[in-house]
Length: 259
Image 1 (cartoon, rainbow, N blue to C red):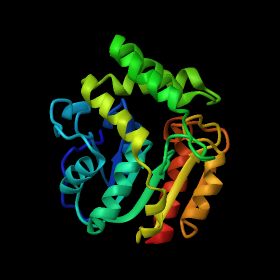
Image 2: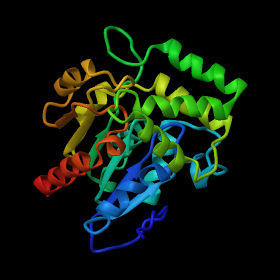
Image 3: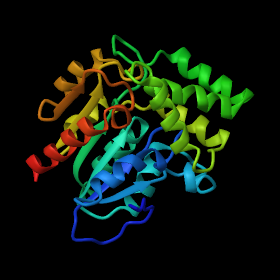
Image 4: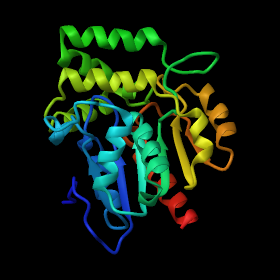
């Protein structure tokens, strides 16, 4: 069985680092590891405060601090792929610690998640609602959020069940970390920084994604014209779950093309 590692290990294979999103943990990538481990050394990191790192996080929970911690854990010249919130972390690592990132991959991620000034994104009141729901019931809030990951998928029930089974293998994050993660999603805007990226960038989207609206894709294309974007027509916010084979084909082909 393939091993999901939280430690950087030297290997002859190129390192592929996978960073998860808000409310989940590194186990979400378990189905990918067995498919990719023959070709890459796959490192699935729990972000600080999540999964096996549930009790290990900085008091000042900022994107810069999280990116610095991640950068310290991964080998130089890694392929770094970030899903959703993990895409913001991966981008910050690429910007602040470029020696760590050889290639950058965004999975259903956005440089700015909140809708504002004609920018397509999540309505601010939706994120406010999650803050309020966390006050009442963390488990119920996370369960509701996990369901959003697969909405629109042609096999939504199976996808939701798989996501829940994977995520529930590890400890639940604290309310503090979840609130701070939402704060990052609400406040961070990296749109003006994307042009500073030196690494090749692949962006993979689901056309049915409600958290990263399809309308944002063309705009991001203009912000990083040298990047490559792929839209999976019937996928939602977790394309690596709902369309695993197609996602892996896109990922591997692009990495080979840029190598």
